[in-house]
Image (cartoon, rainbow, N blue to C red; front, side, top):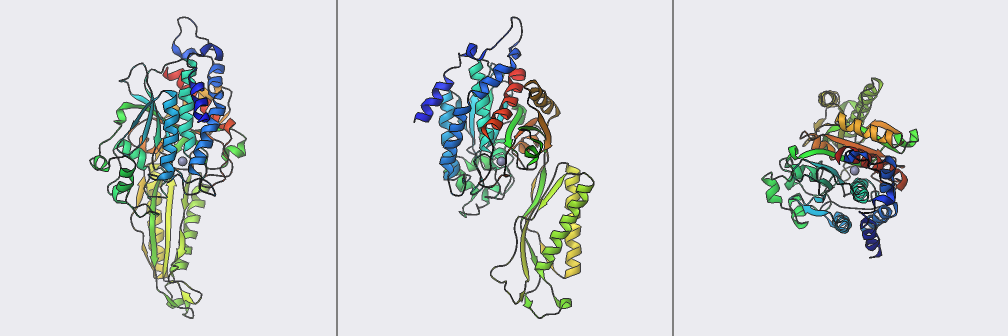
Length: 457
Ligand SMILES: [Zn+2]
């Protein structure tokens, strides 16, 4: 309990403005708080944030790494810890039909469209401690800084602990954020979690949500009531490591199309069968992989950002063997890009590759259901505001497109202006070796806090 006692004492100093050297000149608006005071108000939370990260690590520990399984015990424990922390800060706690967590700092005008600072609290199995959680903690640190500075935002600031962002579990994108917006795709509630075999509806109900309300598309947020959605996330590529920068302002979130359960049907045959008679599903899979790689290289050469990934790629373990021509091949495919037209063009090209390989190799592709997520354009004014905030704080930032999908795209799809800040992180993500430092986390959080103090108070 000492952890939480320490937190309370940190947040009880809302009246401690002078300690941070706040200078507000007579006749000036609320947005004149000194840059140094803003940075100090964030950075003095270092030990508190470190302790909360460690609490989350302990909550999700599943060697190697952490498993915060969505709508399961791992994610539940993270929600409980974050809730206790927010309660100690005096924030208003709320939930919706999708069991998302809302921690609200009231603003001066409680009816005004709100500022949401959100991220997800789930993880991949045996993942790292920072993917997702860093964004929720950044939101809490921003709110903590506002309280310490004694400034009241002009609208409510809602820190959102989002459910089930990692699609490896249910193979559906943005479950939590789309639940809050009433845009969960048809049939999503009947999808089964890959490890438990139970439906999303069952899992949501177990965690206090209301799947019946979600089926009726009841939403927590009217998109018009969200002024901006802001998210901090660890970078999942090494661009910041390479550039020796601590933080970046995001230029866009990719959309994707996905075939979670695709297969190639050929013919299982004797190992001695001459090539001309073969309908080898595995070599068809290999040809498909090489064609996709060539496609990507072509886009790379033309400077058009995209990515394609064959996450699962294998013969059928029940039927394969040393002396058998493989007649079945299974794969998953994720294709992503930052421009809706580029994405649509890629889908047409992938279909053409499939048709060509079918014809050349006498096999049949069964692509199965297609999952889609729209491109998430970043709002230019939010981007500019964050860049200006970084400059005012003397924090040099990169400008990068997100390599990964993020909940912000679900908000952008509903017309909500979004912005994102990335934080340097060694060793990539979706593995136990994520290595964000608390210093870099605080840099990214200072950028967000500066922009919010200057523009939203
Ligand atoms: Zn994430």
